[in-house]
Image 1 (cartoon, rainbow, N blue to C red):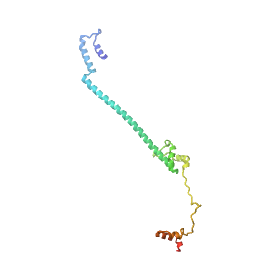
Image 2 (spheres, rainbow, N blue to C red):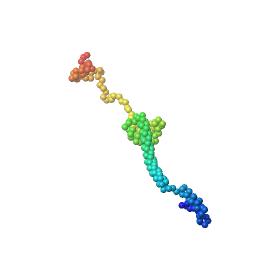
Image 3 (cartoon, helix red, strand yellow):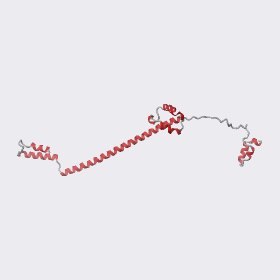
Image 4 (cartoon, helix red, strand yellow):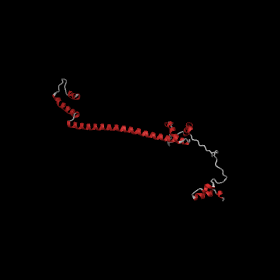
Length: 197
């Protein structure tokens, strides 16, 4: 309203009156001012409806953007978690390779892996452990008690096999007691010394 008063005051004289010759100029100024600053009811309603529609779309867009941001954050967290699991699995498999190379029984691996901080292990670009020699040395020191050792022993001398000097192991009576003819003939051939040929 203050701007409208400025338009009217421009056409007033010092006494606060509008002279008759200033009235046409005042009317023209008022028409121009109203045309520039005020609109008709129909045009106003059309513009208001458009503004309301745009505001609703903006609100919906803001809601969708919020949902998108939430889903993207959840997806990124899930993706990072899966990548971390994959890397952890690679590290675990590589460390199992070290345990296998040291001949540590597989049944001990689960217990050993629970104590190893896999996050401290580094993988190279090929997915293999870095500093394998150092890790192998450390694992040998830490888990040496689990390393399987194999002793090869000969036949026990407490019960040596009988040395019959090439003679039959079965007796003639045992051979003749065999009911199957084919088996009995095989036993006779194997123990021919008992039958004199």
